[in-house]
Image (tube, rainbow, N blue to C red):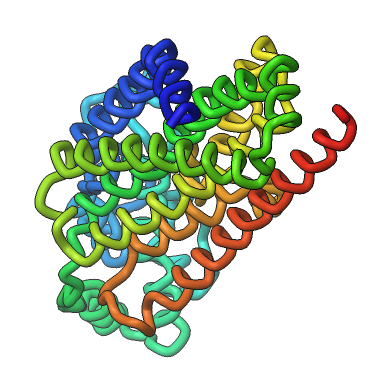
Amino acid sequence: MTIFKTFLKILNKNKFIVILYTVILLAFGGMNLKTKDNNINFQAVKPDIIIINKDEEKGITKDLINYIKENTNVKDTYDESKINDALFYREISYIIEIPENYNNDFINKKNPQITIKSTGDYLASYAEMILKRYTETANIYNKVIDNEEELINKIHETLNTKVNVEITSKLDTEALYGVSFYHNFESYSILACVIYVICLIQSAFNSEKIRKKNIISSTNYKKINRTLLLANCSYSFILWLFYAIMSFILIGNIMFTGHGIIYMINSFLFTMCATSMAFLIGTIITKKEAIAGIVNVVALGSSFLCGAFVPVRYLPETVLKIAHILPTYWYIQNNEIIRTLEKVNIETLKPIFTNWIVIAIFTLTFIILTNIISKRKQKLDR
């Protein structure tokens, strides 16, 4: 009971640190949940372009122009002298210049070239895709068809072919994206809160005065470590439970589904792993002044390397290879897998179980190392 009372007293003195990191989590998690629609929805926009036609508007030339007009916004109000300025100031995205005698040269298989100018942005790329779709289709049929009218009909037939796409997935991708982001960012808050508080508590129990009392007492160091670990786990469990409740409030109904339950289990196992890591760090580091630096190195470093702040898909392969040595990596990998699960069953959960085993190995390793270091420190003190 003495250890628990001391634990609670130190925790009470540092409650503002826990509140600070919790506010950071809720602020960033909440903002992302409100803005996620803008991040993942796509809407096609017709690019603004100009067509400079130096050929007669007939045959393939006329048909090409009509096709481009159907799929883009063709501007025809610019003077030729001001066209380059319009491109520079992004008033238009793309300029298509059809050369003289293009129609006849194309029919005669002389491979005439269309000149283009581009801003290089995504709208220009879209306009280029439209132009290439027509010209590449036309070039394929031009090799085997000599009649111009038949050629144009075949081009139309191909370009007008539409594929019916049926979406069979019932995944709420928007909601799962928000859940995944919340739990990825949660790893930073958990690490920061757990390491900071537990290291402070450990530094108090590892002070020279307390350490000497423990040595001469009849209580075994293993029992002291077990009691401290139990107190630390109790604190971590309450912290995890609070974050879990906040996720239910912020995210909503999806947390009551199979996906939400797996997210909860994943975050719980990571919290226990973070607790054992903090217990080890607190056993090694005895100076209170160094704790803030340790929090920054471990919590911030893990978050940047493993994908808590920047999505995993944007991180270089070299960074991800380094991140394998950190438990945060395996936790975030699970979050990303859960986000894409179509069905929740034993088969689909196998990769998640594997990652949980890795996290458990990390946890046990930290506990064993803590006992070894504690034992050696006691021998040195004697």
